[in-house]
Image (cartoon, rainbow, N blue to C red; front, side):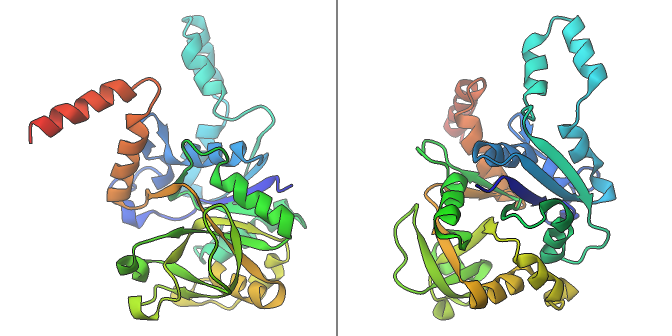
Amino acid sequence: MIRKAVLPVAGFGTRCLPASKAIPKEMITIVDRPVIQYVVEEAVAAGIRDIVLVTHASKSAIENHFDKHFELEAGLEAKGKYELLETLRSIVPDDVNIISIRQGEPLGLGHAVLCAQPIIGDEPFAVLLPDVLVDSHALSQPDLSGMLHAYESSQTAQLMVEEVPWEKVYKYGIVAPENEMPGPGKSCGLKGMVEKPEREAAPSNLAVIGRYALPASIFPLLAQTPPGAGGEIQLTDAIETLRSQEGVQAYRMQGSTFDCGHQLGYLEATLAYGRRHPVFGEGFRELLARYHQGE
């Protein structure tokens, strides 16, 4: 069972400026918690117990968020604010480890994953990009859990993919299935990937969305991968080498995604999570109705 996950959080978040000028983009709040917390909760729910943050010196707020704040907790306890106290203490379950390692240079996603090798060792692991929220609300099995089970069953690397409109395939990395892609919750072998193709050249409309299950054999491939676009070591290049050597599968997700690295994606996530929030949902829906009536 995959028990470790890598979360690359060292980027500067230029797509989120000016909001990300002074705080990490991963700490921007969706309703009542930062984006990074939703991603960690997704990993924990899928059975992950060691979460490796590949971070940067300017991102200490992320590490602090998952650390114990003794003075704040003592103050809440002294004032009898036990509900808030429990909320803080439940951010990280007792059996989950948050581990940080620095990415000294901005050399790309592939390099960030490679930085985690000393902690991951020779185990298979997941990679979760914190820009993307995977919404598995109302599913009997969350998508990350399904993908990790697919890895366990096949012992083959998995890329989570989502069907996107054909007119938007140029924005994504698009997979080329070996055969007809099965329905949601299933995997299929790949014969390749195309980065941001034009519609006419796209082999499918299934986009890679930032969730991976990978074997440890990806590490030597990353170490041998030369810099690609922008002088960065691309995870996609190493995965293509892995595909040619061991095979790679696409796992077709059942839920939906929100790109919180983009302002409209962030706003959509706020709407989706706000409407069903157990405390604020009813009031939020009333606010939406009021503003809709005022249009």
